Image 1 (spheres, rainbow, N blue to C red):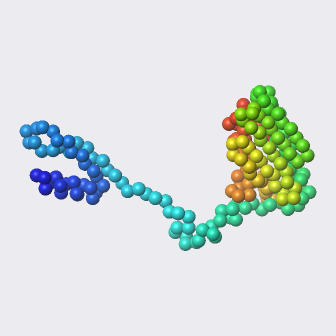
Image 2: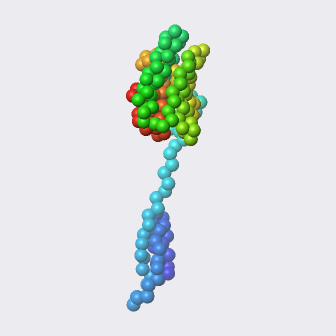
Image 3: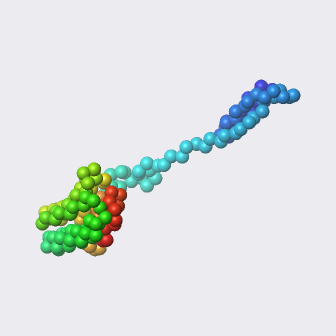
Length: 180
């Protein structure tokens, strides 16, 4: 009887089934299999550069997703100032809905100060590099360039939109939504 049970255990183990036996007192006095649990092997994902055969250095996402940058300084400055104006105007209605909500604007900087526990948001224009930097208390600091085809402010590394990240972080901490 023990040999038969051992053969069943080995066969079920090879199939990925583990059986537990609980001896019960009965007229046959044979152990009864009470449950079967099937364990599948763990599937793992391939690492970067697995099947394609290309080394990791050639699959640099920042080089592939880098948006075409606007290089005309005059157009950049005008577009950057218009963007900060747009952000400032879109934040005006939110002042009524929040206790601490102070917007300050300089020539190349827009700052939104919230309650001390929430921090501050800031946009800063860097004319030399043709970028706008956004600093948020949730996501940190990101640089954005003006896409020459779509005229949208996009991240240099992964191509996400500046407005999207700003709104996503802001609505987590404030009442209302900016009307962009």
